[in-house]
Image (cartoon, rainbow, N blue to C red; front, side, top):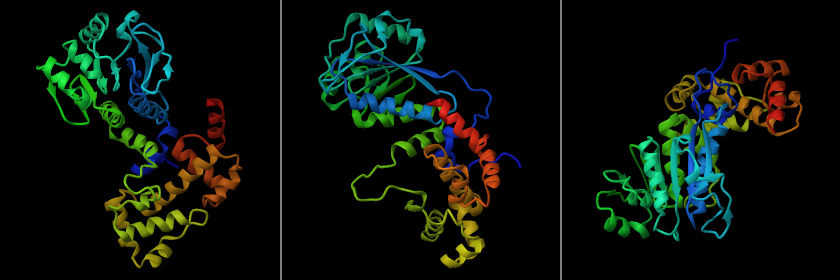
Length: 344
């Protein structure tokens, strides 16, 4: 049987477990986070969460990162927690990084050290992409590195930037990417900013995978809303959502397409057209990928036997399950469990 590939939605859910097929993996992009006194912990962790999750979706790391302070000492965050760092920025060869972010916060002092400014100018001369979280972009502006660039920062610091750095194009957007400059205005926008950076590096499919993991419990203004599934997508026709709900509710004993068609009062051809238009897949392929994805989760997150998992996910035999699993993931279920054990 030829190698199977996942359709869009299930590709995102399974990215971390798919073998890299490009054969041309580049070196990971190297990021340094310079923690300034009283930096925003939430902004920093939001940015880091995005790149750590990106790595989880790849068989090879997409990013490496280090935390830095000017002198190598621990830095106190806005929460009053001292955070240790990997190295002293002023003592490093800045060429070990591709991106450098200055992480500020509401109470971060706004008079940067002369040595820090010179280090930032050196990073610019070497072609690094430079960024600021919260008011970190003000430091870049004070070094003359935002002149002619658009940037954003926290509203509390906008007046200072406008007065002291008139050549900077100040934006009101939550985050801004302008060529080799990146900035966000606060904690809530740091994650979105980093997702936009990742999108530039690795494309929308990786970002969708990250969002699927990190936004599973996003509730907005309705805290009692159930966590989303494909079948709950409000943009889909009600008839298609009914089909998807039937599939999700019948994994152990999969329904035949004629049976599904009868339950939703559609013809098989009508269902196929709905899937082609809205899911970019066929009903049978979607149903199989729904079941193989559930099987992968049970395989790697429980101690259930492979035979029991095969039955629970609607496969006619352990052999059939093993063949399907290998077709999608490139390894047998047994090998997948062994690999998972080695990675812990």
